[in-house]
Image (cartoon, rainbow, N blue to C red; front, side, top):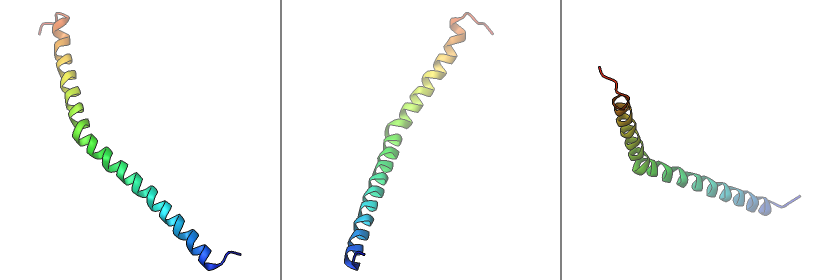
Length: 66
C-alpha cells in the first residue's frame, strides 16, 4: 500500500497532465477559430461569389434566352 505522499504526488502528476491536455486542446480550438475568421470566412465568400458567377454565366453559354 503506497503512503499518502506517494498518492498525493501521483494525483498531482495526473492533474498536471490533464491540465496540459486541456490547455493544448483549448489552444487548438482558439487557433482554429481565429484561422476560420481570418481566412475561412473570406474563402467561403470567394467560393460563393465564384459559384454565383458560374451559375449566372452557365445559361448564357448554353444560348438560353428569356
